[in-house]
Image (cartoon, rainbow, N blue to C red):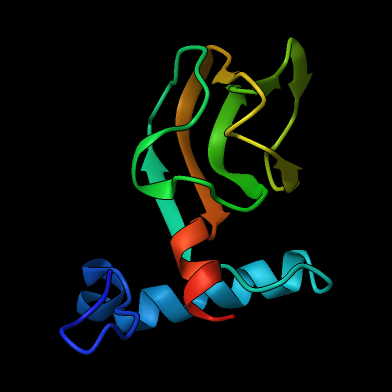
Length: 125
């Protein structure tokens, strides 16, 4: 995440696919114009997650925002037992504190999950 001078480095995929990265972050700003811009976006294809809370690289992340894309039925994001239809409808939640998962679905489902790890927030303070 940081180079030798301790400057923030964007994720490698952002560098490999700059046009896609730009489009993904432009979409975030269109969906939630009052939300602070995220530093990361996970792109999931045909993923169906079991109940979990987030861990790993996003340690201490900000509130996540997810949106579903594609031609599918079902596939709600369930947060603390409450199903949420995210197909073309963004949802914000705290994935580090709130247990969440994906309901069964049929079809082709993509999801975009925007977040900013705590280390990125602290680096820009």
